[in-house]
Image 1 (tube, rainbow, N blue to C red):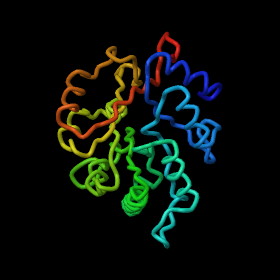
Image 2: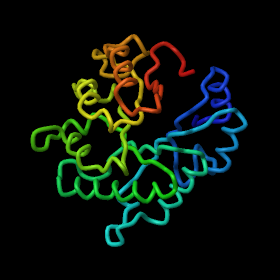
Image 3: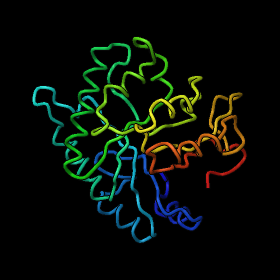
Image 4: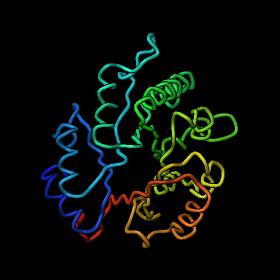
Length: 235
């Protein structure tokens, strides 16, 4: 995608995928293209992007005005232009070791999600392993975040392999918070390397996880994320 996004997307379309989740929105460009340009590229290839990974930083939040910056309003506008339904934020820019900072970040996410909803856009958060390295009260920091985020404003994308890196069973969170999750990164985990691996070759009980999730959660978007390729090429 960094070297040749159009040809890569063409090959992805030829494989049979109809939806993609881009993860490069930099300086109001998606892999170097404006939102309208990228939307046309996808349309021409028969692809759509109902979700994305797009950052939300402390610099995008104006605490005094209780509002997002004009720059981030453009980010939401671009998300709508590309046809997104759920814009996933893949990181938490506030200090996870400082609960006052965590609460400020949660407040900012809630407000940002409320603003985005007026444009018809849902906001979501994507977990990594760091949310399980800190504990608060009787659970993980991630438990606190899920309880404090207003589900009307902030949904969740569960990364089952990232959770496994932290030594946490994804099934525990799917059972505990079934209505919080709207998207999932379908990704297997190799405990020997502590990396993701080809689907079906890792330690995660994929059939159990996906069957339960389909029957009991609010997940709409099932995203194949392959980060480690072994002896295969990415495609």
